[in-house]
Image (tube, rainbow, N blue to C red; front, top):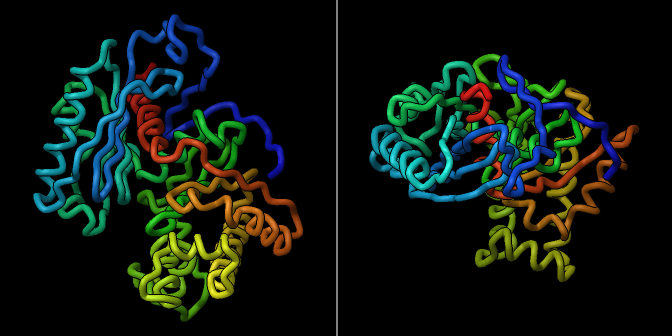
Length: 333
């Protein structure tokens, strides 16, 4: 890990808000110049998480509900609205705005869902921000869930020192977000940052996107589970990592291959985008103590230039905190 340069702010869409993490208040993390708090909500295929967040990024209260995927769009919107209203009712300070991060391609201007997979049935075409604003009477901004997690890391987490960085979320798949000049690069119809679908091995394993050889087929939690079961049908990705820590030969070979594939994908990302740093988040980071040094070594061996990599700091709260930042933008404070 190397030191990075100081970033001045986080921007989303055409809006800009400077981060003032030193704002003083009677309670740590609360800026008394801002008279209220913000709601951040993270919508996933299994759960919807929400929280009350101060203007300086402190999470005051967190709640979650199950995502009623079997009920489709109407059920998801109902639970989303009820969660937001419950957080408003629980807040001791006025709620000024709401931000939402959702799986799928999200229009950052309208807050509508351009496309979503069957993990959120009927979600494609949902005017997400408009519906939630109508339900709560508050201004709402929405974006892709990985973009929103990256905003959280840029605001109060591992990326706050960097003006330009790439964020890779290593979970069931491999998601990504790109920041340049402190601003998210959304691309056409929110399509940028699809790191998991970089072609790592042409003609390789089929991916659910229709391509073959995508990075997420080799460097995701799903990939590690498949690799683990290939060694022993009783193994999971967690078993694989445990055995790797014990230096079991088959596990060592498998995890070394995973690290090499991940490094290759990150090198490609680095050469195309040229960020100050790459921040890695997602569920697989929980096991990073076992393979992080090897990843740094692999990146050093593959690149002629030093590459800064950082571990995400906010864990599963990144989506809530980043979404609350969008809530500040929505409220224009």
